Length: 231
Figure (cartoon, rainbow, N blue to C red):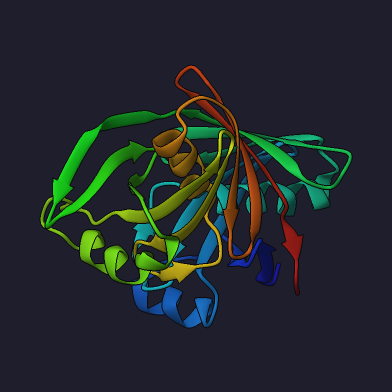
């Protein structure tokens, strides 16, 4: 099977069967202008294991958009209505909806206490991967993102979101992805923004690439959005 290219609100991933002896250099070559690479190993008609790579050849523990894309890739081939995607030690259940979008059970999330670094106030949110959520002007992500991503307080680097609360259930945000830079949207970023800025219930997170819907139930998060094949 040849690699294909998929889009999730402007967050573009190359999807490939599991590569033999993948190296960061080979991944960078395959990614090209995309935001990352998803290696997919089908386990059954309704289940697959993935390895997620960032554009710079580093590995990502989790990605909401990438796991949704991987599920759509598998469902297109098998017709499954619900797909399980395993990434590392976390499993994401993806249910395809009548309107063409998909709802993901992202599992448990953890929100840390408020912190401050170099005058930047933020909260850490663990969505299976690390996030730092800042409340403020989304345009500030261009300088806040790189500053926090590589700060020594985050030894494995971090994803960064800057969000502005526009209503009781709406946040406008921009995202700086670890190992990629600014991207049009982020699935786990949407969950982190909803948790860090609102905290509970149903939240619309508006990125430059479009809107993702997040539902927070206790410590569990559900994410709804599209995944479209480009080539």
